[in-house]
Image (cartoon, rainbow, N blue to C red; front, top):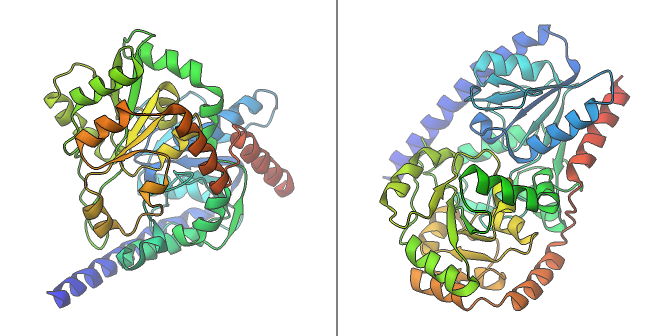
Length: 409
């Protein structure tokens, strides 16, 4: 059996490498076109994501500054669904091989929150800024997974990391963890992570925006439930699933209203790669208080709009903690998850977020929640992490882009 699995992995790796070779040819062909010093190509989730995450906030800072200068930047967004809504100042382009090769080959800057497609080639004049899609992680990535890191995942990660010029960081913890986590030995810059800027400046605006968007009274409270991505083995074709386990929406709402008072709604935010499965969950729920926000492009706007955060292993709970939101973990499958993914980067009991392994304990954690003690523990956590997010990350990244442009000119 082991020999058969080893052969299957070898065959899969061979096919991926062969495909990457032919993929790279299109990039070499596109080098006949010159690099535009003011062209910036952006993407999220390898093109599967929409207008969101850190690239969005960098784009908006660029456009704000462009209003006051003659020579403007051209922003191209690679998307598998370019027909989705994008601002007029961002040109969405279908993420097909030849369009991707042309635009990446002629851009002065690449800005993404995930890896490039295996086989992508970067020109010497192009600067690749990797924002990544987390500020701190619970689940292991890269070398942190130990022998659970598939060979193909390592190959793709190392290939992409060799092209990166800068990785962004918002805390001392990331400075130490990114080399192994991202398989990256290059420059890490302490700008902060742009996706977090809205958490410092957008609370009131997002509160109004998302209640109005879903026709909810402005006075209602919201818990954002955002379980992390689950996928099959990266040694072969991946499968993904959307499963909320034994989470009971009715009991969850009752517990929140008992502890915090008022009327509560649940925003359900599945990972973008399984967002199309959200309707299966909504169809089964009976409270009438669950709103499907899985297709919203900007996760951090949703965090800013919410009042409480619930997840299993998503790094986003650390971002909600920047706003001192109550955060809870629902981890009934921890043993199975760790066996597949690798040891978690924190012992859950050491984090300030109460961790429940069944619905009854989640209910108890919510009803017994001590906000004063929680905020004391949050302060300790931020000190341990060496957090230096301050809502100014986008400005610092654009300063870097402008200084590079000036030097190249």
